[in-house]
Image 1 (cartoon, rainbow, N blue to C red):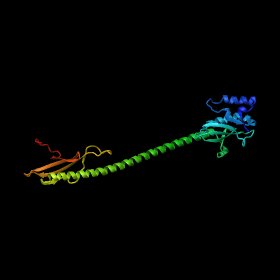
Image 2: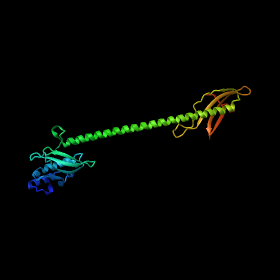
Image 3: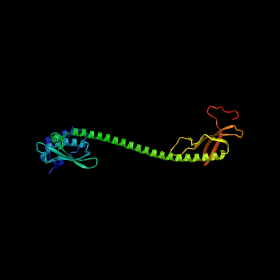
Image 4: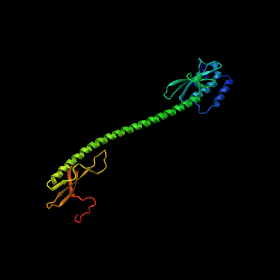
Length: 261
């Protein structure tokens, strides 16, 4: 059975090598001797076990080194193989096997069955870079889809707005025509210059949250009792729910205003 290092008797020469290894280790290493277990017959491999533990503890997948020992099924007196138990970020444990002489991770799927921790770190960084790039593209696609959905929703809102606006304009136009005909329908030589619904003047730019007040301009001609030509322009709008007509003389473009007007 393997025994804990702290319960094993170490020859003075081996202890010296081990402590020299510890003293030369980077100060930030978190590997503790209590985490390393070896059979007494393999105590001479302990410094190499410690070096392997440092590499495993620094590897990207191992967030916490739990323990390390020799792999009894593969270790020989001349060729040690170590096995370590780690805990990852998801708090799940997994095993890592390390070749003692080369301090490379044992991976039977690799050419030669070994891979260096430097290569593993490089592959990890490349995988992280690909993950970040994939996440960036996914965020961009999500943002594009969000904008597309917002644009589609706004388009539907505007379509509904214009349908309602068109009905509102037609209703006001019919009311303007009916009220104007009722007022001036008896005038002589009546001639309607505006015969179809014109584009109304808007009180403000169209907005989804409201409909602007409308003003229709209607032009017509007539004759006075004495046969004088009369030219009129009507402004029709709704004020406080009532259709209001503002009838006045019409001047053509470039025509000077009469002194009496």
